[in-house]
Length: 306
Image 1 (tube, rainbow, N blue to C red):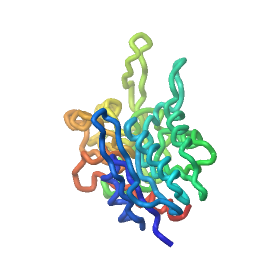
Image 2 (cartoon, rainbow, N blue to C red):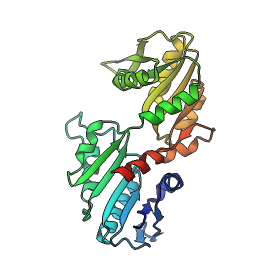
Image 3 (cartoon, rainbow, N blue to C red):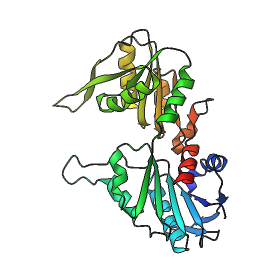
């Protein structure tokens, strides 16, 4: 039986070697070019008929969503036996619910977009990693089977490697992430902590009002599911330092790090280290040894057993 055929979206070319190293696949080439008016040309340059196909591609931008959708439709139309969509990063994950009237629940509309990829005879599966909210996987239609892979084993291993035998506290950026951090801290055998925040009713500005645990003289590892602008992370790190912490480390499942964010984090002088997984292209900005661990093995194993 042939190995699964692997196609990769343009943004996730950096991730492809790690997935090849973690599992057995056959590379599927894609022909790409741009027309003068900005439209794109895509062509599957490998025969998909009757094959089990894996489509690798996270969705950091709207263009990535469209490329994933276009390629998924082409793979199904080409007669693939099955399609497994590997999505290390699910864009718009924080828009999973409406807060104000008229707001678009973009996480749901994007899940519907991917669900509209025609199904294959042996099924279409979507593999997701450390979603901002567990319920997002249920936004997909039932004929597209979803697998939500949790990164806690990778994150705990990364924290243990980073901290070695030094005592530390596992911190959250706010009370909203406290439950997840408390579970992770229990697995690590350390104490959890989080910062209290309050919002000014007049200006809407959020400020830190305190820390719930004694962190004096301790190193604090702050975990968050994603690092974007870094504003809340810096604010939390400053709060832990003000409470007497000796060092602050930041770790995240998704290192989004849009332009300027990493420079801002480093310029703050708050963090002794920043680390996370390679789920997002932004992770490639971190070049320090051991700063980034790959989630490729997690996906390769899930593809084998599902």
